[in-house]
Image 1 (tube, rainbow, N blue to C red):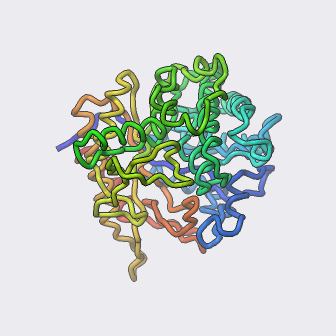
Image 2: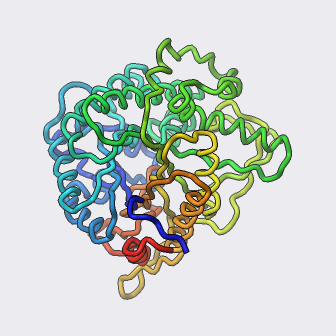
Image 3: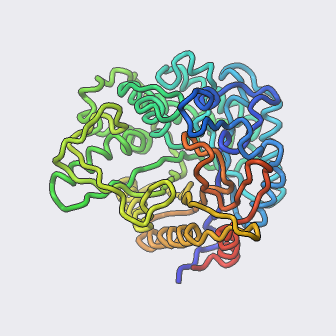
Length: 451
């Protein structure tokens, strides 16, 4: 039996472009995801976030669901183009007012707000000037954070500067799978550094105006060697260097690991790192959030390098097929991988608290004749992964929170509306919300906090 203490924070999570809709209302500017999703062939079925879950108009009833769940906290993100339509200049008051109502609504319901400042919706105007490959974007981010912190900082429980910088940089600028859809390995590395710089500048802006917790959220990949060979262990280290350490080492240690530079030396000279950058990036933070869905098993010694790989500079690696059972995304369901990820992260960075900022599963939900969704597979996923967090805590890992992904079925990036991660079903034609069995299970679990 595992019981979580009263100080452990349980919540659920969403992201602005995935749920808000109302993309042309109240002065909101265009984001890179508006452009990308409206580009033919980029998103399954040509889906866009134009309406999504209509959360912009239904936020109050959605927060009632969070309260009914019994969640301690709710993780949301702010759409930068709602605050600065072109990414520069003074705040759009209508955007500030929307998020102010949202924060107040959470507090009125006794729910802690965890606010992510960048969950990928970069103003398109900034992308037109180079996006994250342009160093200036990091400074524009700091200006944006200053505006948000000045307006909301007295009421936000916890801040995350960035969500999954690896996805923003590597899927956005190397593989082209995500907005803005560029394909250039060096641009991905430059974007990674500028995202790190934006984080550091953002932390400085937050510390100047708030006394809240400050951190960031990463998708630290759980690479696992499929055998005990030196080649497999070396492959794990090389992948760690370009997918994991490239963000957390400068942020938590103040330097890029030499292996990161070595692995990528044929791609870039790293001349974009200016004097003083690492001092700015290496700001004291209170926690690191982890988004975990599935591990990756690998072998070394077989050359599978290919153009457009997100693992910039890495070759001689074999990625093994995911082990069954699989989610609807085709990802392996492996709760032990979450324990392993949290444990090995803590071993490398022992002095920082951790939260699980996203964890959940897309499943092939069906609605029965009574309008109910009996998603036992998702319920089991949540139950076993929360148990995996408990296992990590028993090993001495300082995990202090867990957030399900996602509160609602939503726009799942390049997959559009074909994948459902929500514990609450959304009928996209009517916008009706329906509790799935997994939501009822989570509600019952939160009442006892015992597995």
